[in-house]
Length: 290
Image 1: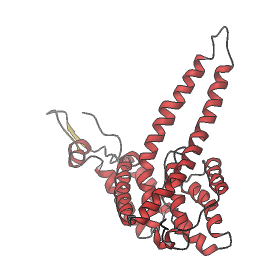
Image 2: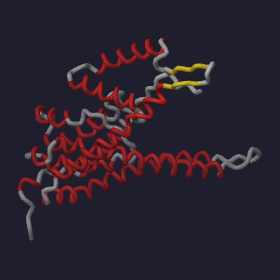
Image 3: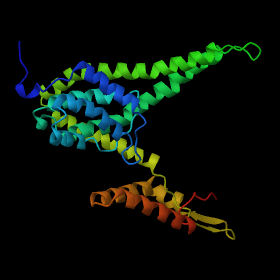
Image 4: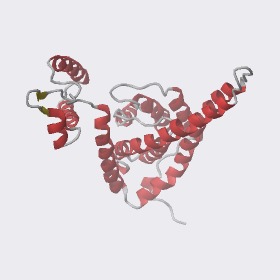
């Protein structure tokens, strides 16, 4: 019988701690910020895990471990266990040997998986399960002449049980399966490959999110009704060079400014002021139709 190397043993959380972390994750699901989205909730969730792994008095270690979760994170909450279950396993392996799984690997894994997990979860919960349960409830409501309270009660109770049930099952199953998965990655020396792959997927996901969350268009156009000619700068220049070119350029500019130490608040106020001025001047706005 083979024994895993000592450096990969780490420390295991108690089963009750895993359940407590899930409960915290559900109760404080509304703790979300504009800059980091769901990171405050994840930091709170991982605080339950870290206090079990490192103890409440080890302030320096706790601060070090918390810092890697203050990054942008946003996914489907009931399906978040598919990511956090793996992350908890990785944190268990890091105890006593943080270099075994670098912090960058965990951050890259979260960034790489949050988009695909959100897509799966949104479709399953919002587009399949909830409409199905609502339709069954509507069918049980009866008629205007003979209403039945079973219909709304069925929809209310079934949806209230579905979401936490799915979340808890995915959370615990992913944590159980993730232990053997992380062990295989460590034993096979695949940590670097995991980091590289997660970074690639993360870049793709974040790149795809730019045109979704950053929408900037110019309303500049030259129209000559006498000769029936027109030139729309957005559609006939920017979009032909590359779709969503302006949002990409602004995102890269803000990223550079943030890396230089510019505060988020300053950038927010600057964007608000410039948006008002440029819109008033007719530079930014809806794309003209000709």
